[in-house]
Every structure is written in C-alpha cells, then in structure tokens.
Image (cartoon, rainbow, N blue to C red; front, side, top):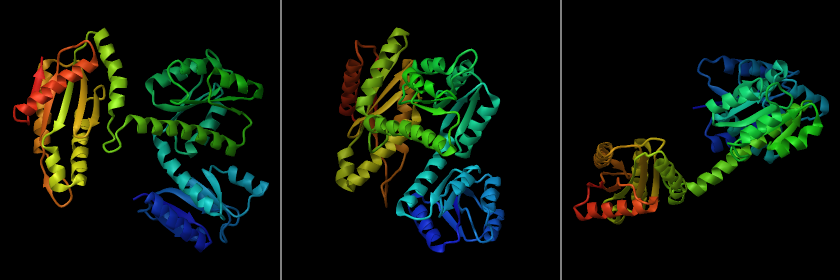
Length: 414
C-alpha cells in the first residue's frame, strides 16, 4: 500500500491528518515528530513513501533541514507551517516543494487531500514545455517535475508539433512567444486546428506582458509572465489541468453508461455514424452485432437485481476486452449490447462472435455467495445498408431469429 510520511511536532494535528488521509485516500500514513525519527523511518528499506507532509521548523530541525533531506530522497514534499510571513514564504519556495499548508483550519485538511490526490494522478498527465532558451526551459521543466508530471521538451514550435503528433494525449503546453521557425502564436494556432481548449490547455509565457491578450485571442487558455512567482505558476498549471479533467468527466458522464462504464447508445450513434461514413468512403467492410443476454429476467427474478447488475457488468467487461480500440462497443440498454466492427471479412466475424458466445457461456459469474453461468444470443448484419440505423435494425432482426431458433447462437445476415 502507498505510504505518506507525516513529520510534525504537534501530535494532535498529525493524528487529524492521518485519520483524514487514511479514510479518504486509503493510504497508509506514518507519523513521526522529530527530524531524528524521520531519518530512521526513511532509511527503513521497507518504506514506500509517495509523499511527505513535513513541518518547516522542528525542535531538532530549526532551519528546515528535514525538508531538504526528504526532498533529497526524491519524495514529493508538502510543507506544514504555522507562520506565513514574507520571509517564511520565500524560504518555502526557495526549496523544491509541492506546496505549503497552514497548520490551522479544517479547510487545510481538504487542501492536503486535494494535493495528494493531484500528485498521485500527475504521472499519467503529459506536459509539453516549449522554449528556445535552454536555461528557462530547464527551469520550467524542473518545476513541473516536482509535481510528478510526465514532461516533454521542445526548442521551437516545429519540434513541439512533432512531439504532439507522437503524443496526442498531451494535456498541457507551456510555450514561449519568441522562438525561431515557429513562434508561440503560430504554435497555438496550429494546435487549435486539431485540439480544442477543452482537450488541451495552452499557457503562453513571455517577458512582455502586453502579449497576454494576444495569446488568449490566438487560442491559449492562459498566460503567465516570465517573472512569475512559483506559487502562482503552480496554481495556473493545476487550474488548467483540473479544468481539462473536469470537462473529460462531464463528457464521460454523458457518453458512458453508469453501471458498466461502457459507451452508451447516444455515443454509439454520434461516433458510429462518423465511423460508418468513413468506412464507406474508404471502401472498408462494416458489420453491426446486437448481443442480448438469454433469460436475463430469470436471473433477476431468481437471484435479485444486484445479481442482474453483476451479470451485466461481467458481460460488459468481457466485451470491452474482446474487441479492438477501433471498434465501438456500447450498452444499448437493459441486457442488450451493440458492437460496430470495420474491416473484417465474413469468416473473421463469424469466428470472433462465435468464440465470444462460447467464452461467455463458459465464464462463471460471481453474484455473491454463488456463481452462475449465462448465455447470449447474437444477431449480426454484415451487409452494407444505406445507413447505420438500417444495419442496426437488420442486426436486431437477426438477434430475434437467434432467439426464435433456441437462443445461445449467432445468426448472420451476409
């Protein structure tokens, strides 16, 4: 289990932090109260600290030596402080810390949880830093790495576009304005051809503050001056990443089924129509399959609706892991699923869906104290029609034929 190290002389505060983190994040929290005990804890070969919450001033570490030590061990460090004068604040940000938290106030516990949740997610978030100045680019990258983001570097816009093509899941670009070959404005415009502000955030950076409005008008989400305060820098980066993720969560909620996390009927038609039209243009084969769980009502009536939900989730899991990323797999409603596959011949389709049917029949599904087996009927349309909707209707006809023929079978229209 991931561990969090809390080093704070106040045992009451340490206990509160421990309780909150363990209850909300399910991490193991180790609390010590002196520099000496912290060193012993970190030197333990079994320790697995993913972050430290550390008091700036301890009785045996009056000048913040413990903070420096923990950072030297590559442990992301959040500083506890009971004082926030300008001198203390400057001292904190002179070190490579994640952030600081005041020791008093319940809202600070909320912020600790937020920070820990954030930095544990950041390793999967890709950030691209673009600047022709090696010195300034290195400075930005070093700051980003403190928060554990996955960082890429480019010296100009052309190199940035090349990196983005190889890493289309980059979520944030921090770009200077004045660069050779392609400046920050041109890079921003080029990126916006393929990525909206909701998909990829861009923060413009320049020593000339008069460029801020122009960066925004060219498509940047934000702007920051090169003489920024570190605290401001982190706030802007986090805010833009959080906004991207918030929009993704909203889209997932509207496009995915709440029970199975599969794409829903709405998404199937939104993306399916585009995939269908694209396949027709490229003269690729298209097939639509309707899949229905046999005697599903009997499962609900016999074992209850919780068991029915477990069955649906298990079938969904099998379907999601059986098909390619280029295929569309969705829950159409109730116990019915729909799959759109492209560029497969009839023999491949017949083999894949018959294997799927057998796999489901043989799979035991845990519904609590019991394990049960279920079967599915599958109807497939392999004939190109005038529209996706018509292919779905024909696949549904084939599904009805499979049911009428005794269930647990695949019927194809070819």
